[in-house]
Length: 393
Image (cartoon, rainbow, N blue to C red; front, side):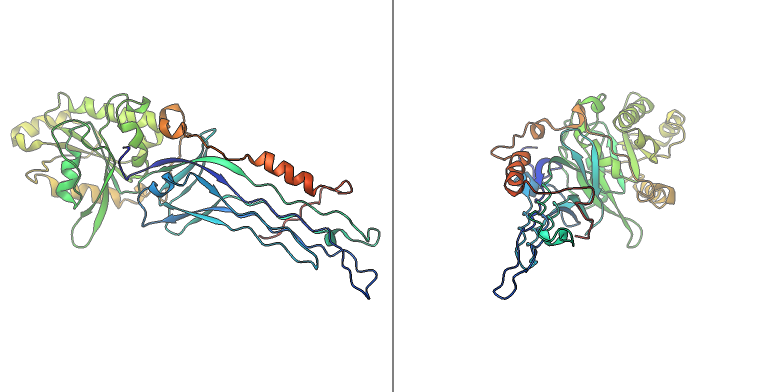
């Protein structure tokens, strides 16, 4: 995965901008002896905003952009002049990106639609100038508010591919062969396990001009939900699928047992996957005759639509497409009406090389803001429960 352009997990450090300080200025003019306070408000700090981009399919640009800082707001000045707002930073991510807190693993938010914008970190509000605090009994307020501090957070961005059908199976079950046979995708195919090292997407053409998207992930082995094999790192991608297509080869010792092992691994990874509709495809069935297939049908899992297929000869492919299309268009299986529950990241679901990433030469927010606050603080400054006024940014 080190040389691959498909990056689906990155850890970055984000910091919003701090608000500018309010001004403690007094109006002075030759013929106006009692000008009064006219200090302007400070500008707000810049936001960190995530925006979905349907033309992106990987988090590769963020692999080389580990520190994302928004601009700070400028301080106010005399004449009720407001300070300039800090520059917002818009981070474009692929649709299907999920955000977690890097420290706790807690789920924060997700971006699923093209053009969708989510304010990840809010910039600090600017401080109020001293003209806000003038009154009949306080004509010369010599204090103003400092700006709100910035927010700094380490986050993990995890990409979960958006596809209609997800292929699930053991290594060498024929998943890549099937994807290459029914779509224009050209995944690597070989006679050894773990040929697929990263997820592959293919557009499958159905009757007429209709089509659906199929995703192939690396093979799953028993114990994948606890970190064995390659499947664990890519199981997240099938959380987005509307239908799961289980593939078990016809030469397996026990088709039902292999199917149950795959189901258990998915349930241990995310229990919500147990509610997704399933279709079973018995691959490499060109070696079977009609009599043998009839004998095998009673031993297949109950309650799951099953079909014998061969990606090489095209056997059962049309029937398989019909099954998948019926399941995809069932309103009960739509992703939008049944959003997934993202499990928090734990030790098994993290990528070690990303978690060991070290942020070097980055000053902490607390130290920097503490110095700014000391400079702006005045002994006569007064704060009460109404010191911050909620206004639109």
